[in-house]
Length: 302
Length: 283
Image 1 (cartoon, rainbow over the protein chains, first blue to last red):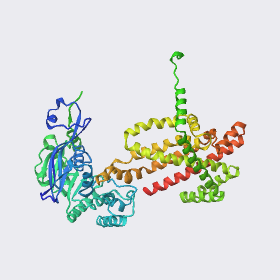
Image 2 (image 1 turned 180 degrees about the vertical axis):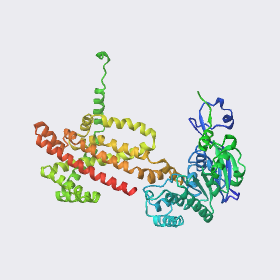
Image 3 (image 1 turned 135 degrees about the vertical axis):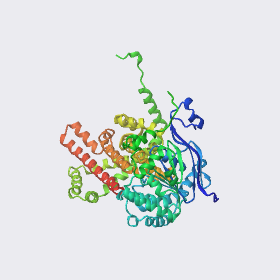
Image 4 (image 1 turned 45 degrees about the vertical axis):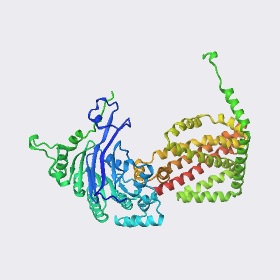
């Protein structure tokens, strides 16, 4: 069963559109959208990528660029319209309900921006939750959970409830909950976006340390280039649902493929001032970027 | 004037239908009626077997556990004492038995069907108008068939109270489950929760404050039915009120009304206390 390919994750031509029809939209239709009757928003536009074992693959883009949708498609929390996602050689998109449940329980674990912790369960129970779903005995799962909780530095908080913890600590619980699954692949959806800069940096270091220790493969979604540069061994920049540049972080910084990527690089360096030909004005980046970031709308059924 | 030629009544058909139903299902109704009556009598005996001072002690202790506040602890005991003082003790117990049985029936039916409403939009669309009708239809109207099916006495009272009291708990169960945060549910699904596990581990526990509020409302509705139910000979405090009404006996009416209010206040505070305790624990 072991897949010998050097790639743990192979994603091919994933499409996801939101709209009033469930029909699969062929590529041709997207290009020549005159006859399409439905108004659709393309969230993920023909994305393909591969992730090597043990690597941290960062997907970067502004909000609305489809990165969160993409990462959810890998777990089928959102059903992709078409395309395949091979994880450890198995096609997630072809799994039936039982296989999918089994896959989610054992092969992959996810960390969420909004933590998604159970408010009525203690930290220990929250971390052990995935094991409980798997049917692991109480004693065993609590012992495992306690070990991981110690690793993320929350030992004395085991018996507390999530609402008694700060945001950073809650996300540590979220990370512990993912680590205890002992899955090869971790999906992280903007895990540190809700935290203040100092805690965020600390958590990034923590994640790097844990990655070193556990040697997990991670797919990390963020909108922060600094974060991407610190963590990523490989990264992709997403815009309007499509990958516009992919490569090693260093290469992307040195050779941004277009203005959109260039802006990311500038703001990451703290350079927001524009080129002198624009009369030295300071341009606010978010406004300009959001103008470009509007989703593609296919078909106009009026 | 609405033209006389355009007149059509469904009343005789309803009458026929109910009589037919009564004829066909008579034995079933009787069996149901008997078992319900036995339950009621046993419960009443059980409640009466508890001496009055023990009631006061138990309620006071519960109040102390929930509030830890001197005044709030003493008041329920004093209120209960006044019921006995007015000579309404046995009658109040009779009412309490009807309310308890009706509420238990309401929960047995209301909570599962509330869950079904939360799971399926179709079930929700079917149930919503039914619940609306159950709540707005004057309770006298379904007291008539209840009386025909189950004769006079406490059983039709329980059935009518049940119909009146089910909607709140069913609605609030549905609402509570539907309002559970999607991000928490998504996380549970991402870790491989099946829809059954999601319901048991996440949705119902997080909806529990809402469900408890529904149970509280259902109990209050059941209590408010006691006067109407005494119309079919259910006895209890409602009967006292009706007798007072017939005799224009203001004092007697007030005493019976007072006893109903006391029951309501105590049941309400105690059940809210339970709900709050749970809420604090989870937050």
